[in-house]
Image (cartoon, rainbow, N blue to C red; front, side, top):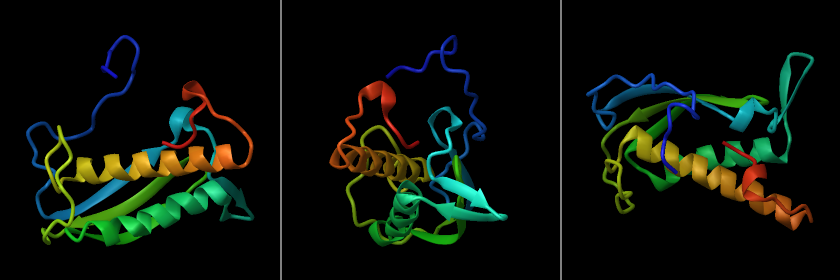
Length: 140
């Protein structure tokens, strides 16, 4: 899908020219599509994850198992978004580079995480007997 400024009203907060594969700590916020509360509810000041929120948590933890060039720090799943601190440490990559993105970069890691979470949530919908179309995809 091609980014169109007249249709997609997102602006990048990335630093132009910065190498996001450099070692260091990065704070990440990822919002759900249309900022829908898909991952649970806040009850008495505490986040209570639903099955989709648990998918987000499980896949975040797996990210560090898949990519040994990163370490996870503090993170939290909220009803319509996710916050996490990830350290790029330049370990040896276990996976092949993603086409179109710099291997072992923050963007590559986040793209894989979002894709996997969305895929698993959509699979859980289908297995629960609720078909999802492209326009009704859940996740990030």
